[in-house]
Length: 357
Image (tube, rainbow, N blue to C red; front, top):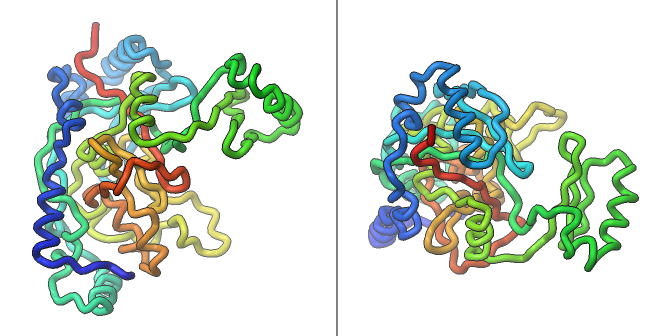
């Protein structure tokens, strides 16, 4: 698959860099006041439905969200009954905080024969003489303890550069009335979206049209825009928790790829099933399901989770092609702060401290 084999010096340097998970931004995120105990997973899981509902309604009022319902999400041996919210067309879910172990260094249950065969073929191809665990550790973040704050997390990945605006925004109605004219003609066609590439898009969700203006932006501008909306990007530790929930296996479901899954880019003909990894996880999040979609996280410089499809494009099978979707995979710091709208996506979060009565 064209994988670079790291020297001892390379490995030591990469491990040292990976241990610097506490960037200035992540430290600032974790310096918030201690969370209300009810918002931490051990106690939150013990609350009754009525208690959770009251808590979610109070949280919604405090953060200006619409509380929709309490839902139970169960997947891969983990489960959470929590609140689903909406704000400005976005769906959020409440994710309780916890103290968890993150990172990976050894199998928890071991690989099955199919995964072992795929991995062995690749190791032989690149003349790798170490163990399977040593091979995988080169791309994994180090094992560490992390305190994760409670969060309201966006349920879906979002494209970068699209700013939600009202139909009365002067940049739309005054500067470019022709866009609105195109929209009016298109809206009666029964379609759900009109995208004037690089300019504006209109989307119909649940019978309501919304407008988005396109803005080119870099990483610092993205963070500034989110900050202006009371939002943030998850840090590396937060992202790993949202993705894996503190699982100790290579993936949330086990120590290898489940070859029965319907996966992006590896579709079989006439397979109309939903993409398994895109379905909501145990927190109700659609996360880390397509290696081509790199999720931008909060750090001092542009850092992403996912390899941009390098493994799949290089001809890897399901295991190594989707290895960068593991919650333990080491995030990649980019060379500059330029965002690529074809590969970079984001997930907004709101960190929750004390929930007012």
